[in-house]
Length: 278
Image 1: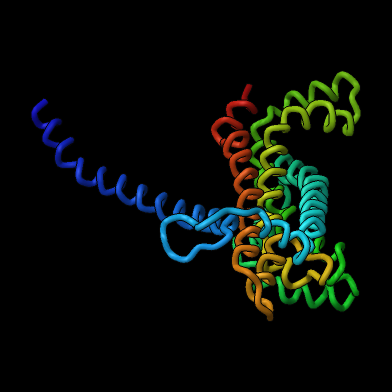
Image 2: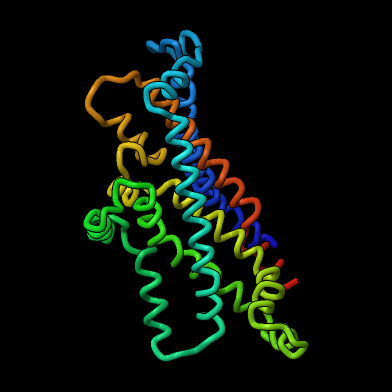
């Protein structure tokens, strides 16, 4: 027992060091977030810990100057379209890869991993060049297609483990009872794979809203998502109040934070695995 106590005391400096690092990281991120938040409501802030006054006029300025409602509408349309199309393509493809063994399967899986693992800029430039040649870039369809390139492989990679955990005997039993392959897929497989579909959809939604490179390369003046519009607001020519840029940043951070909290709440991998097993 004495030896165990000495080991606990010896290990305590390491534990405290980890706690100190986590606390420093939280304080750093929190300091950045609250600085941007307070500045977005500040009427003026010349030194001191807090602004001299508060106002919401910078949010109205962002709405008028940066066409914020249009940007949010475009962001929503692009994100939901990418989620719907990637699920429509990815779920059946994941079922085929999970259930069938064929020559070259590992090569197909490797190709699906490439858009996820490599930086988007490496394939974004040739992809944007192709979209410009076909007249799709600069339009909403071009932004959706560009974001779809890494999205549906992401869905496939997420869905394969969920489908593999579903007992194939359930599908065989349904077929023996006279169900067609389509009814087996829609009435048996999809309800059991709903947690995985929810996980894939939410993660693709977060990924699409946060995707800068592919959207930046293919978006036009009226098809910018929120993250690209925020970049132009911060770095485009001209003088703009920093408070209005911070207002857009708060909206962007709030949107992604809410989605992240939903993801952490509903798509915990351990929780999803247990649900699939049940």
